[in-house]
Image (cartoon, rainbow, N blue to C red; front, side):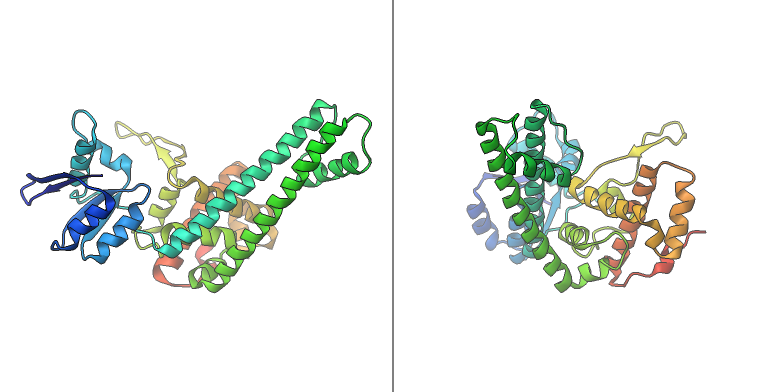
Length: 328
């Protein structure tokens, strides 16, 4: 990696190429410094190691560093842009994650990959059956019933080779189901043991998946000044394209963490689907909103509201209060 240092006047006083181990040895005997790192793979480990040495470490998203890049692009110019950006008072920094957050985030990533792989296996089986003239209704249960008919009763329209392939795909499906169930059990155990997750699960739409995913992403949430900042970071607020004093709001920005946004939308979609089981204030708010706009807009609006409530619960250490959902 390329290392570049600036003095108090902004003059370049250091320009070196160091490995990660050499960098830690180089900074070990230096007095406390402000160190800026572009948020990328390994940045959290390096940030924690440098912080333990007594340095002030700030991680920055790459898209916020790029405007400070001058002329052409190379590693040293990138390092200079990072050194410029880390000094900006309005720069937005990435909080350094703990080992527990990274472990929890890794569990979510692996589970998500298993879910996507299971969906791919089911779609492939549907395609094989469709090529033989057999249409299957939506839903895993219908596909499972159709496979039982093909594999157990034989099926006159299917060759032995195709039945063998379907059997192998069915075994892969069963194995993925087992792995996903194990991941769900582990996430449920973590959610029960973690106080922040336990408080989040009191909010409608927050189960073990959503609460652990949020805690893994933002920790205690103190990085955000207010709840709207969190919902904007997740990408649940309208994208703005205004000029000439005229406000023009578009669809949601879809910025930030797509997995976390998907978890929020799945959770709030279940709340909207069971509106009659919700607290009276929430049910009234959803009914009024549903009478004015599309169902998907209601889901996103509720996700936006839940993100703000989640920020208050995490950052202030409070519990969920139903009265907070009362809207004038």
